[in-house]
Structures are given as C-alpha cells and as structure tokens.
Image 1 (cartoon, rainbow, N blue to C red):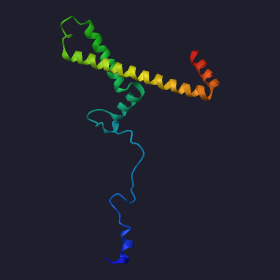
Image 2: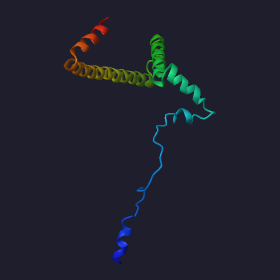
Image 3: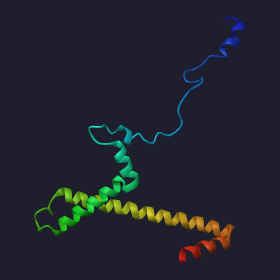
Image 4: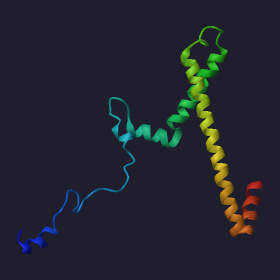
Length: 133
C-alpha cells in the first residue's frame, strides 16, 4: 500500500452513508386511499369515519342492537350460541378498556391540577369555578 493513497480511503462511503432523499411528511390517507372502486368509495368512507362515526362507534351500536335483540328473543333460540358469549366478552373487555382510560385521564388531570396549584393558585381557582358552573 502506498502512503499517499491513505487520504483517498477517508472518503469511502458505506451504503446509505451519503445524501438521502426521503419524504418526511406523514401519509394519512393510506387506509382510505387503498379502498378499491370494486369494494367501496374511499372518499365516502373517510367522510363517514371523520364526520359521522368511527368504525369502533359503528360496531358498538351494532353490538348493542344485537345484544338487545337477543335479550328479547325466546329463551333457547339464540342464547346458547358460542358467538353470543364471545360478543358479550368482547363488549365487557371494551368497557374495561374505556374505564381504564377514564382512570388514566383522571390521574393525569390531577397531576396537571397539582402543577397548576403550585405555580398559579389563582388560575386554578378560576379554572375550577368555570367547571363548577
């Protein structure tokens, strides 16, 4: 090896070590943009999802309707279905998740109110009065 080639070796580029061009803005239409015309209209799905009800809300309403209809059905007709037990279990687990989120929100709100009380007691009193009305 020749000593004068040492400087040239400092400029060796490893894969992906040079300039890279990439988009960094988030792509938010990945789901609705991939709905093919044969299966539905992505623009309508997006509008319903954002303006009317999310899929979870729609499924929640359907779950409530199914369980209400089962309660009114004659005994022994549909109450023995395994899927019905699964639906009830899923509904209960969803309610547990919602309750857990409410608890976390309360804990976080309490932390923020404690910080506000320490830094601005008058601001805390004003805020609490606003929520008591």
